[in-house]
Amino acid sequence: MPRPRLLVAVLVLLVLLPPPAAFGQDPDPADGPVFVARDVEPTITNEEELGHVLRRVYPSGYRDTGLDVTAILWLYVARDGSVGATRVLKSTGYDVFDRAATQVGEAMVFEPALRDGEPVAVWMNQAIKFNSGDSGGFLEGPAFVGDDVVRERDSIRNNQDQDKP
Image (cartoon, rainbow, N blue to C red; front, side):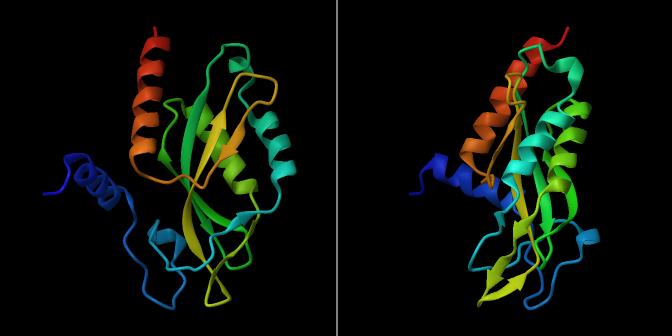
């Protein structure tokens, strides 16, 4: 008999994962996230630059509030490693932080995903965490949609509910 927790995790994955793309074709970014088979995941190549971007786009009015939030984005990583589209998968609950996370996502550059040794365009998740400390934020990812994300989402929602007037 399947364990209830495992069954819930599988259902969460089925709901949150994108449908598969046609094999051998790049997904159209306009169609939104779809799964593309790959042997090697994309890897970020411009982490140092992204640290500067995170500090630059961090909403200045929030820096001293102690507010720490995380957005999870869908990123369309093209065959050349550029980001061709972004979508917010899990909001921070604050539009200003979601827009900042999208700017960070758009600034990312990747070694592209590979399938059979050839570059392939893919959609992937990427967590962007903003913290009020000196660093301004950091990247966590790729984000894996499952129990950990659900727990973090619930924790963030609880913290935001406490912060709202």
